[in-house]
Length: 142
Image (cartoon, rainbow, N blue to C red; front, side, top):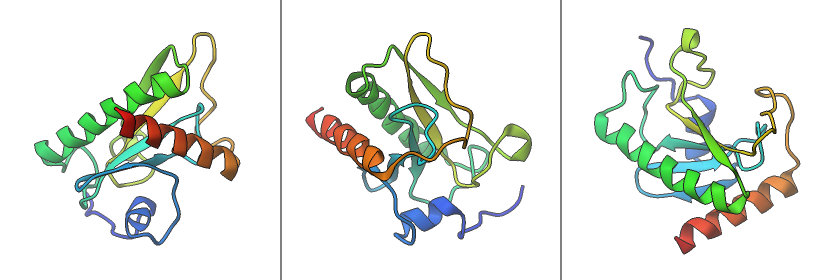
């Protein structure tokens, strides 16, 4: 398996070199909105460490990412009035991975509403900011 690339886009977000719409952060994980969401509230959860994907993640890192993903999934159900939630996680090129830093997609879903195609439409900054603020507030409220 190739080595972790510290210049991937998510590593740059973690270092503050690229902007993001932060939803959640603790000492081990960071969550932010996808700028090309497949549905409103589409959030990514990543570990803060240099982890390429599930194949090189420690059990503790992967478990923590999933604990955070569950919290965010629960919050997105409330904030976006979702009927369900889709979680996606891809590993290596053949598995559909595009950014080589472990990440889990949390996508709120509504009955009868299909997801947008991947990377098909960039959302307006003001919409992303509003969604991030609402999700962050719901997470803080518990």
